Amino acid sequence: MSALNSTAPARRWGLTLLALLIVGVLLFPLYWMFNASLQPSHELLSIPPRWFPDHPTLDGYRAAFDSQGRHLVISLFVACGNVVITLALAAPLAWALARFRLRYAALLLFVLLIVQMLPGIVKANSLFELYSEIGLLNNTIGLMLAQSTLSVPFAAVLLRAQLREIPAEVVEAAALDGAGAWRTFLRIVVPMSRNSLITAGLFAFLFSWADFLFAVTLTSRDAITPVTVGIYRFVGANATDWNALMASAVLASVPAAVLLVVAQRYISVGLTGGSVKD
Image: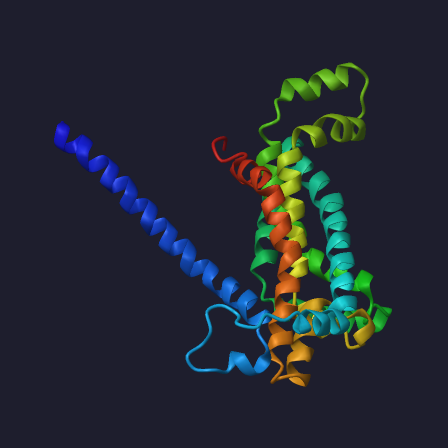
């Protein structure tokens, strides 16, 4: 027994060091990106590479703001719009799948899963033909709707698992008090599923923020180009200005990182909701 007790702390320390090593490997590209964004371009090509900037400069960030500031605002607008569309469609759909005896509920759920498996290039090419006919090319609303084809099925499946855990007695009590279906949904269901709604909204934001395929396919005007395409075109025009390129990448990473840090406690609860109950 004493031998087992003595090996337990050593095992915990070993697992902790292993976890720190894995985290370090995962975070190293982010550190190197930030480190490179503070170094002049000529120092980035030096051998051996500099692990810390000897002469830190913010010139890259000034150039990044000048070239990517508009694109960052566009990405933020489109991502927030996609969150609104996703939750407005996915939450009622998930509630219907979770609580009502729909005749083809299983088939609809299967279709939602299949939609998530479709290659993005297939969706993008199909939407390009449709948008060219109805005038939604080079349109931020068109981008929101295109990105929602990915986020709505994911959010509906995620929310359905959580909404099935809401006790039927609560819904029945609201009905006895005279609340209709929509009032029950808005006043009872939505507040009780806050964690899952935040999780679904966060993933919808991240899907939209990181989107490149829809953005490069459905937009050609620089005035409405999201930051992912903006950086892609900036790379082509400034292939040797690594300082500004890394600064642009850092700026594009900040909103997603901040949201993940702020919402992490909601994510852990939202993702595990419904994992026990079938």
